[in-house]
Length: 295
Image (cartoon, rainbow, N blue to C red):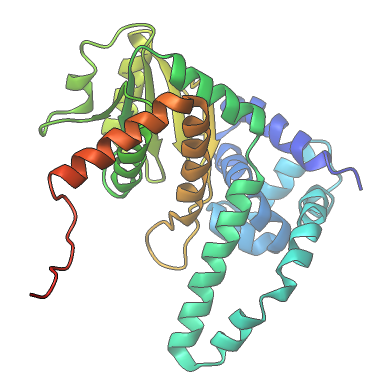
């Protein structure tokens, strides 16, 4: 089985998605965002999760030149084989699942977290991460924005990343809107936005505003297909599939850790000196609690 077949299908879908009918576009977006699930699930489950009919999935398969949905799904199933073999040693998950109702919840959540970390890291392209790193390091200023749950990811990225990237600014500041803080931005600056489904209106509007001002746009998201009006330089796609009603950010934080490691490596001696200066400052101002010695 040619391992590039799945990649070619996804590339074709990304290229044609804007021209598809609304139902086919919804099916294509689900397939692009959840290729592993497409390989695992039967057609009825995929249709239900995508919010389309099974007929739409069959129509999609034939539009791409396949005889039917089974032939279309086969490359996605084949791509899962190596991952399935890697997961066979998780005996402890099966054992935890036998520990009653809470054990089942624990095992499902833990298995999901392990799976999305693996998939999110496996699907990254080293050349893309290197290009993003260089773009961030060379920018005059780097604006970083996110809201709601995604804000936690942005805050952590800013807290650590500014050690290697002193031009990094987390927006919005002082209860402003992100657009307010982008008003003075200029070409040569970069906006890095973190956004996941359901997409925040204010974040997407900030991205559009930044593009209109000539900024380079970078995204960390759960999909490459977000809004037809956005044309990012690069997108780091991570899986946020969850066993509860909110996204699981374990995969995203793993990808952010990789990007931070790249920035620290690229920052070199200057980054190390900056970290040491902050460590000295925190020690001198007693930032961290220490137990008092007994008299």
